[in-house]
Amino acid sequence: MSRAELVGLLISVISFGTLLYLAALGELIAEKSGVLNLGVEGTMAMGGVTGFLIGVQSGSAWFALLIAALVGAVFASIHGIVSVVMGADQVVSGLALTILGLGLSAFLGKDYVSSAPGAKFNAINLGPLSDLGVVGETLFSMNGVSWLAIALGIATWFMLSRTRMGLSLRAVGESAATADAAGTPVVLTRMIAVAIGGAMAGMSGGYLTLVLAPGWNEGTTAGRGWIAVALVIFGAWKPGRVLFGALLFGGLIALEPRLQTLGLDVSPILMSMVPYLLTIAVLIVLSIRSRNRPSVAPAAIGLAFRREER
Image (cartoon, rainbow, N blue to C red):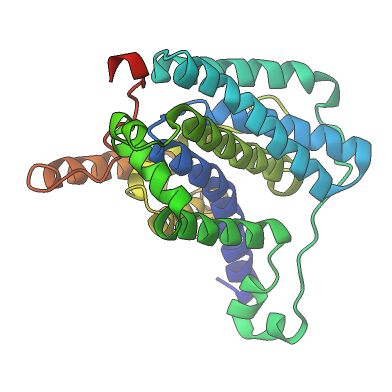
């Protein structure tokens, strides 16, 4: 593999890792509050079509990404209202959100299929730092969204582990009744967490249609929202481990179209199965570990909270 090919591969790994990490980080925040949102795929699709349409109309990639995040937050709030406020089954609500998002995004973008993108992100070139070999060419030539994803990851870690807000969020996810008795507004906390998670999923979808695959086509998310959900489990609900998993899974996605050029006779279909096989393996390991020690998953995840039943 030549140096240019290696740099291209590493940039693709970071790009796909950014896509997955943004969505997975949002899902992690929601699940930390005790809400399982299986609507990530649909939310990404809504963010993707919105980001692309706004980019075409405004010509501003950052503005398009912001609107994609806002649309993702509003769309995910539907799941919050149904499952958190009304107490409906979180799995059913999340699946319905995915089906709605995929269908609605296809309808909204039907007149823009294969249209040229109206906005794009440029790589942030840091001058001499970009000339420091392969590492410099890779790390210091990333676009702004990748740097934003890193900043959001650090902020999420700090919020969850070092702030009162993070403590309240984790308390709600472990025992909503206990948190409520301590004065924490459970419903409000969960709604905010779901909205933030939706914003990050919408941003991820916008990044997909503005950067990774500029343009809009039905089904452009291609199941990556489900990989993001799996990443939260793979990363054991920790932002740092989720980042590692995002880069690992991003690497697998980046390798798919390069297998033949690298002389590897491996089916791309088999490669696309690897992230899910790894997630199943991690689930088995976590299940075995939980026999002798407490589970790392939030204890109240998937459980509706009703104050009158406390």
